[in-house]
Length: 592
Image (cartoon, rainbow, N blue to C red; front, top):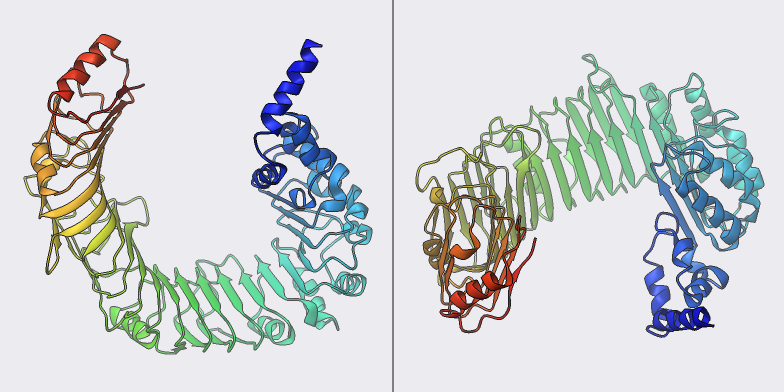
C-alpha cells in the first residue's frame, strides 16, 4: 500500500504540475531516437500516455539519423530506431537517413509496408535495397523522394526504377538522385535516366566523383526540363592545364553547385531563373561567363585562375562569397559590387595588402566576414552606411598579420576581431556598438611596448556607446583607449599587471566587469562609481583576501573556479571589508 501511495504521489507531482498540452510541447523538442523518448515515458503514467500509449502523431512523425556508420544489432540507437518503426509506423511522415550503417535500411525494409502515411523518404550516402520501393504502401501520401543512386545492392538506379516510382507514387512532386560513388556503369545509368520518358520528374541531380564529358553534362542539364537543383564534382581539384569549355543552359534550374572540377578552362552558363550558384575548387577555370538575371547568391571558392568578373551578368545579388581566388584583382571585385548595389552579405578571403569597401560600392551591405590567410592583408577599411556586423578571423592555422581596422557606420551592432596578434589600431566611428570582441591571441610571455594597440572610438556629438566589450589574450599595458561608454566589460586570459582602475575610468559607465582566466598580480584594486557587478572566474593568481573594491554602487561579487574554498569566517571578513565602501552589496559568493 505504501508503494502504491508513493507512486500516486509521484504521478501527481509530474502530472498535475503542467497541463498535457505543455508537456506535449516540451516532448516535441526532443529527438525521438537520440533523446530516448521510450525511457522518458517511464517517469509517470501521464507521460507514458502522452508518449507511448496514446501519443500525439506529431511526436513520432519525423525520424532523422545522420552519420551513424558504426553500428551493431545491440547498438542503443539502432534498437530505439527499430522499436519506433515497430510501434509507431502509422504516424511516421518523414524518414531521413544520411551516411548511416546499412542495418538501418535493412530494418526499414522490414517495416516499409507499415509506413502508410509516409510523406518524405531520403536515403543518401549509404547502401539500401530496391525492394524498399516495392514494399512501400503509401501511393497517396508520398510526395518527396531523394535517393542514393549508386550504393544499391541490386545495381545502380536506372530508368526502370524511375518509371516504377513515377507510376507507383503519382503524388511525388520532388524527386532527387545522388550518385556519390564512382562505378563503371555510372555514366551509362545517368544517361539512361536522362533519356527516359519520365525524366521531367527528376527535380534534383547530384553527380559526385563521376567524370563526364562536357557534351554529356550539357545534354543532362538541357534534357531534364523539371530539374531544379544540379550538382557535379569529379575530384579533379588539381587538374592539368585545360582548354575545354563547359557550357550549360537551363531555364528550370534554381540552384547549381560545381565542386572540385579541375578539367575545364571556361565556364559559360545561362540560367535565367537560378537563385544560387556555387563554384568550389574549380582550379583550372580562368574565364567565367554567367548570365543569371535572377541570381541572389554567388559563391566562388578556390577558383585560383579567375582573373575578372566582367562577363558575370547578374544585377540582383544579395549574397556574395569570394574566397581564395588568388588571381583576382581589387578592381574586378569592386566592379561586381557596383553592379549589384543590393548585396547585403559579403564573405571575402583575398590576397591583397589592403581592403576597402565604401558606400559607393556597397550601399546596402549589412554583414561582412573577412577570412585572412596571414600572408598579405594588413589593413581593412569598411565605410558602409548600413553595416551591422563585421567579422575578421584567420582562415588557416597561420595567424593574421592585420595591423589596422577602421569601421565607419552609424548602424554597426557587432564587431568581432579574432586572432589578430599584430593589430596596432582599431578605429570605430559609430553612435553605438552592442558587442565588440578583440581576441589578440598573443602568447603569455610576449611582452609588447606600452600603447602597442590603440582602440579609437569616435563620434561627432558624444562618446561611443558599447554594450559589451570583450578583450582576450593580451597585456592590458599594451592597450590605449579613447573615451567611451561601456556597459559590460569582459577580460579573458589577460595580464592584469596594470592599473585596472584607470582602464575602467576610461571606459566610462561600466556596470559589469568579468575577469575570466586572467593572470598577473595577486591583488585586485578597483574603484568605480558606476560598477554594480564583479564576476571573477578561474583567476588562480588572485588571492581572495586581496580584493579591494571601492565601488559604492556594487551589488554583486561572484568569485568562482577556485582551487579551494575559503572558510565561512574568511568569507565574512572579505564581505565586511568590501561592504565598508560598497553599502549596497548583497551576498558574496565563492564557488569551485
